[in-house]
Image 1 (spheres, rainbow, N blue to C red):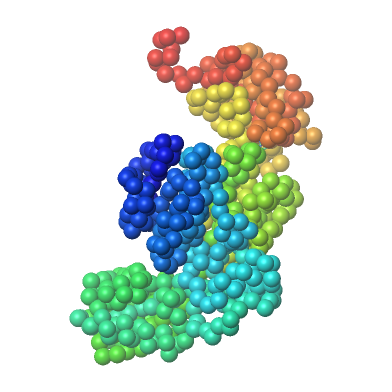
Image 2 (cartoon, rainbow, N blue to C red):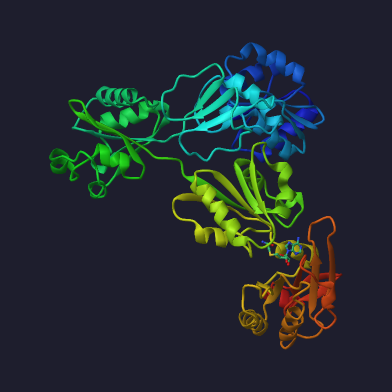
Length: 556
Ligand code: SAH
C-alpha cells in the first residue's frame, strides 16, 4: 500500500489525483502531518509526501532502520513539478515509484541513486541474491574501474559494464566460494534438489539432509531453484515444510515421468511404494541439467542435486515507426534488460541512447536477415539475454519469423509489439483502416510476383482497404502501378489514396490523393501507400473509411 500525505490545498489536490489514479494501491492519511507520516511509515510499503523534502527528512529520519526493510519515500513539491525519490531508492522501490508518480502527475522524476543515474543496474536489482563487497564493487562499476565478470553458469543477466579482467570481480556461481574484499557473488537459481521421504519423515531430517548434502558438495543453498519430488509426496509434511523454510517452491512430477529418467542409483523400494525406481535423482534431473550429487540417504529421507543452467532469453522488440514517444515503455525496458542487442545498423542508431553501458551490440547492414536471426538465436542459446529489434512491429515483415523459425524450446522468447507503419500512417491520414484492411508488401525480392498479384486481386475483389509496404524502390518501379491498376478494376478513380513518407519521423510527409491521380514517382521505400475501399471518403482533408454500422448508413 502507498500512504499519501499532504499539508496544503495544492498538495491535497495532487494527492487526490494520485489517489483517483490508483484507488487500490493508495491510502490517504489525514490529520497532523507528523502523525500522518509516522502512521503511514509504520503501515505502508511506500509513501508519497506532498511536502518539502526538508520537512520529510526531519519527519522520517528518526523512523529509519534499515534500507532492506524501510518503506520507499517519494516527495512531490508544492507545484507538482518534481517527484523526488528521497529514501529507499532500490529496496523500497522509491526510484520506480518516483517515475510512476511523475507519469501520473506530469512531474519530472528526480532520482539521485548513482547506479540509476549512470544507467548501471544496482547489483541488488538484478533479481539474484548477492553476497560480498556490494558497495565496493558498485562503486568500481560507477567509477568506470575495470570489473571482471566470471560466470561459471550461463545466465541471462542484464548488461553490466564489465572488462575482461580487473581488480574487482563479479562472480556468478552456485558454489560456495571465498570472496576477497573486491568481489561479489551473484547466486543464480540453478540447483534443483530432488527429495524423497518415507511417510511422516520429520522436517528437520529433510532440511538437515538437504543442507548437509549441499555443504559437503560445496554448493550454496541460496542457489536452490526448487525442491522437487514425486506427485505422491506433494503433501508430505516434512518436504512441504522444508521447501517453505528454504523459501523455494516445491515442484512435483508424476511417477511415470520420473520412471523414464535414466539415473545412476535406481532401487526397488520407491518402485514398490510410489511407482518409480528413483525419486530424488529422477526429480532432480527430470527438467534437464546435470547431476552434481547423486543420491544420499538418511534414515527416512533421500536427496540428490542437479544443476540446471539458465535458459537464454530472446526478446523480439518492435521499436515503432520512428518517433521516440511511439516506442513503448515495455520496448524500452527490454532494450535495457538485454546484454546483447542484435539489429540493423540504422535501427540500432535510433535507440543507442537507451542502452545500458556494457550492452554488446551486434549490428549489420541491409540484407543479412537470416544471419541476424541466427546470430540472435545463437546468443540466446549461449544463455544470454538478447534483444532482436525491428522497426514498427518486429513481427511484421521483419525479424520475428526468421528468428523463431530458428529457435528451439531451449530458450525463452518474449515478444514486444510495436506501432506498425500502417498504423502510424493511418493516424496521420485520418481513419483509413476503420473497416477490414490488409497489408501487402510489393517487394518481389523473396516473394514471386504472381503470389503478390494474386493477393492484390483478392483484396480488390473483396473490397478491402490495402496498405502497401515496400511499395517502390529504385530498381522496382513497375509493381506499384500494376497493383494500383488491379485495384482500379474494382474501385472508382476517385477512391482516396494516402501516401505517407517517414511517418512519425522528423521529415514526415503525407499526401491525400486518388487512385487516378497518384503519381508513383512520389513514392519510395520510406513510404506506405494506403488505398481506400469503395466506402472510403475524403472528409475535411482526412481519409475516412466508415465502420459500416447500420446506424451510420441510416443517418447519412
Ligand atoms: N516492421 C515494419 C515494416 C518493415 S518493412 C512495420 O511493422 O512497420 C519496411 C517498409 O515499411 C518500408 O519500405 C516502408 O514501406 C514501411 N515503413 C516502415 N517505417 C515507415 C515509416 N515510418 N513511414 C512510412 N513507411 C514506413
